[in-house]
Length: 235
Image 1 (cartoon, helix red, strand yellow):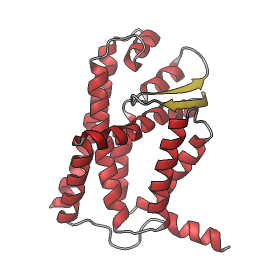
Image 2 (cartoon, rainbow, N blue to C red):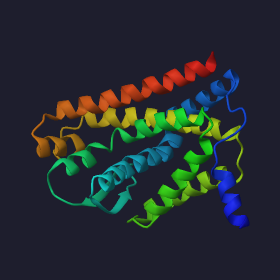
Image 3 (cartoon, rainbow, N blue to C red):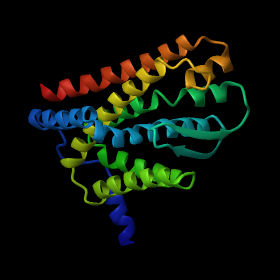
């Protein structure tokens, strides 16, 4: 079955040397910095961070037994994911909490895995998740973003390069991490009842400051992981 062999070959971990050189890491970090600080580019890339945020709600919701029914991304870079289940309770709290930390957690996981030769399985998993998510999109913009992400990841997956893949994923991880901090900085100043911390406070009777602190702690831990990996590679 040639097609199965072709897929399997592109999903296996790298078997050779995958360590990045200091110059390669420096270039990757500079490219990630340019993406984040260039407003026109960031306005586009930010939709990817929002996509991870919303799929974080959805994925964790599914894990805790809720039904994922759909999600949308909006032109103002916001989004909304809908899961069905009990209106209150631990499952609703956990799925609501998962949005803001997810870009940072995914960014740290991607960097950690990529620098250990697991870029191909990570990319394969991302493609599968996006294909499954595609049937739950509820707007034209959302379809466009998901298809663009699939095209980008699909090209990276099909024309596999064990040298290029970890560099791309390192850059992606850093962008997601910075994106998580930028999204978090926005919600820290949002005192509306409809924000995730506001909903969490209403569901749990725990002050929104505590939930915001939990987001900060997760982002800080993810930053520590990424910084450690990058510094180790630069030595």
